[in-house]
Image 1 (cartoon, one colour):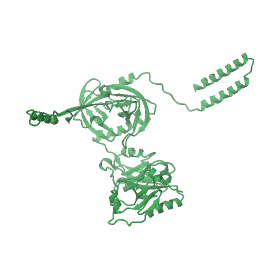
Image 2 (tube, rainbow, N blue to C red):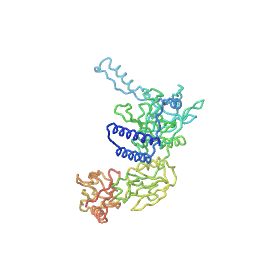
Image 3 (tube, rainbow, N blue to C red):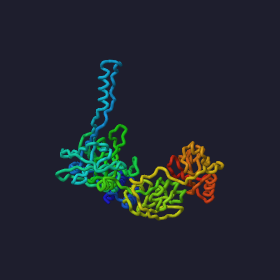
Image 4 (cartoon, one colour):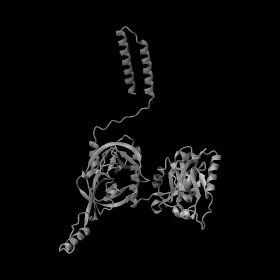
Length: 508
């Protein structure tokens, strides 16, 4: 409690100063001095009860760390044969000119002559026998990959495997001597405000060091498996694939992207977290490819209105919008409308947690999945498939029939005009024959449904987690939910083969 004496001395000095001032003018400030004394005691108690925050001083220098780690960082040069671009001006030669054939042959040679293009990037060695991690986009489509070590030695590298989903690639070089290498750290331990250091080959300026802090965690840029660390350490073109180190000299991220209006660093860089990279690298090393677990569900976030409509106490988990027929989830009995709360013993706090949990689980493993369904939780046992062999089907198969459903009267429901799906509407909105439900034929642009993104042409196949086949069905479901005291209701909406749930408030 080093702060306590400081507070006490500060208050005491001010009390003494007030007392001296009063004596010089023949006045007594005794009562005020007592008030200050009481205030000092209160302040002392408040400081004593405040939680202690351990502060780490800024490093005096990064020199020792940079000297220790730089030998394990490499510059990467790639090259590939590309067709020559015919962007230059073409001379205008009059037809019949003696130079016509000459210029024609010259243009043809220029168009057919290939050229070699080169690119620069960074990487880092993770084992003494020469395994190197970099970004997939650094080596993508390369015919030749050359590695420059810190010592200046150049080695040819071969590609072991790539994972475009996380933009990670694994290379291998052969060396007569054991190579210096670095270890992965636990990226989950990195905190916003921690010091970090990047080493790489920005703009061809090899083995450059930059430092900054962790600006944010758990950033997602483009993919289901993203878990980026945001940093203000300078990252530029050529840093891609290089390591982001913590102050213990461990790799906690792979520098992958920047946010910039001009192509240069403005202090917003992104590094794929080491806990994602480690799993990918292990699979690439063992199999030459990734082998991710596959559940076979289409999911969406659970917002507060959906939680209320479903009867959940809080907005958490991943809402199952659709299940792939014949997939692991379908075989285990998981169905649309279920909310996945836990996967293999791990709580699913938000939707984006689930894809990484599933992907990191061994193919063929039987896992327990806790789902919320119709007001209670259930546990199902799911044996995972392999994502790469069973990519999720973009369209959900449903029951089919030979005749169109009987047309019934329209219904005005929650600001929408619902109609039966007729052959004319199937043709107008390009709906598959097997899709059943009711179609939104018109709607009030001021309604909550419009604000939630529903539009004419959307098909509603479930209302209140029950299938509907006519506008009257949908109207009855909403009425029943209102009579039961529900304030929100869940709709399963499909547009262009993509199902999603939408929660709407029920009008009083």
